[in-house]
Every structure is written in C-alpha cells, then in structure tokens.
Image (tube, rainbow, N blue to C red; front, side, top):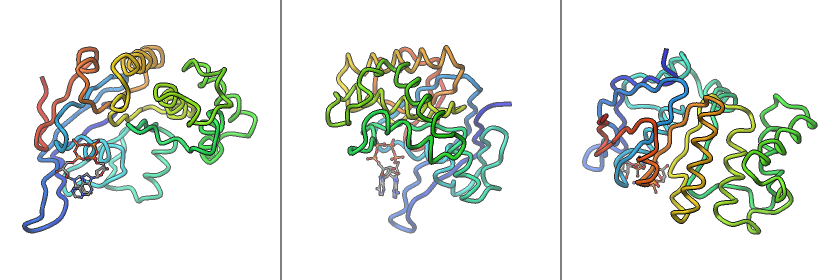
Length: 225
Ligand code: ADP
Ligand code: ADP
C-alpha cells in the first residue's frame, strides 16, 4: 500500500465570485521511500497540496489516505497525533525559535512530543545535529547561524523523532544555489540511508534534476511526467 494516496481531491477557498479552485480532481499516490519533487509556479497549489496530504487542511471533496488511514474519518486531535508521530516538516523560512539555541530547537519538540524522556531527547537532538554536521554549533542561536546552517537545524528537528514522511515546502527557497545544493544533497542522502519518504515543493531546477520523481502541478491540476 502507498504511503500517501489522494483520490479525486478538490480544494476551494472562498465562495461565489471570490472562489479559488486551488486543487482540481487531484489523484496522487506516493510509495514508501520515494523522494518526490512537487513542482509548479507560485500559486499553482503546492502548499495547499502539502497541507492536505499532511492533514493540516481538509479537502473540499475527495479522499486522502496517509499510512493506510483515511484522514476524513479522523478528528483534529487524531490528525495532530499522526503529524507528531509520523511527519516532519521543513519550511522555506526555517521557522526556528530565535531565543533557543540549535540544541534546544531540536530538543524541545521532542520533549513536547511526549514519547521521550529528558535524557533521550537530549541524546537524539545531539545525534541529529551531528548527522547534519552541526554538532559543534549546538550552542548557537539561529541569529548566529547562516541560512544554510539554520536549515540544517530545521532538518535535524524534522528528523529527530524518526518520521515516516518529511514534508518540505520550498526548503531551498531562501538559500543561494550552492547552499541549496548542499541541503539537497543532505536530504537525498537521508532518504537513501533511512528510506524516509520525502515530498518537497520547489522551483529549483537542481532539485527537479535529482529527485526520484517529479510531480508537476499547474493551476491546481497534477500532471505526472
Ligand atoms: P503555491 O504553494 O503553489 O504557491 P498555494 O497552494 O499557496 O500555491 O495557493 C494556490 C491558490 O490558492 C492560490 O491562488 C492562492 O492564492 C490560493 N490560496 C491558498 N491558500 C489560501 C487561503 N487560505 N485562502 C484563500 N486562498 C488561498
Ligand atoms: P508559497 O508560494 O511559498 O507556497 P504563499 O506565500 O503562497 O507560499 O502562501 C503562504 C501561506 O499563505 C500558505 O499556507 C497559503 O495557504 C496561504 N495563502 C496563500 N495565498 C493565500 C490567499 N490568497 N489568502 C489567504 N492565504 C493564502
């Protein structure tokens, strides 16, 4: 069974003359372990699609299966538990907490997660900071790190609870080409080493070139090639 299966998914915002059809009859299956680039111009529906497949937003119609669970049947609390256990998120603007150092940015979500004791949370945070090459900068706050380093902290945070699926919305969008390329290398390496499923929205040609699979979205319509 696929990790993700969307069937006949429509999503509209607003109503009447201000209605926007952000997703139109989207069918999409993603297998466990795939590395998928979701490509399309700004406003084509990438964020909407990521929000719906991760249970942050509900479709207007159609069904979403995530890890064999029909999301329509789950309430907000149940969706939030699935996200906390099985999903990791990476954002264009990193979304780190500025007053916390790198270690605590990775550690605190683990403590809030409820599945880890203090000691294990700390060890995991250090382990994942090490795996993104930032062990030596664990004490720095986001403002004392470069953009690429901040995104590495965010990647460690997204991975530290060993999610089945990582959802990344334009993860290299705020980085220069070389830094973005290094972040991409890291994500591909993690995908290959751990089998974690990745879906990444992007404008980046270098990501498109190297993704295992490209899903194009245009005006809310998904087109495989
Ligand atoms: P992308 O991520 O590809 O830039 P989005 O999914 O953010 O595209 O947006 C798709 C379309 O839906 C756009 O026309 C956008 O303006 C609209 N849209 C997205 N979110 C909302 C919202 N919360 N309310 C109204 N319109 C929205
Ligand atoms: P991106 O293009 O980088 O994906 P956007 O700036 O289009 O991001 O959207 C950022 C957030 O704002 C998304 O979560 C999206 O759902 C929401 N959004 C986008 N367009 C609109 C809109 N017209 N009205 C309200 N919210 C929107």
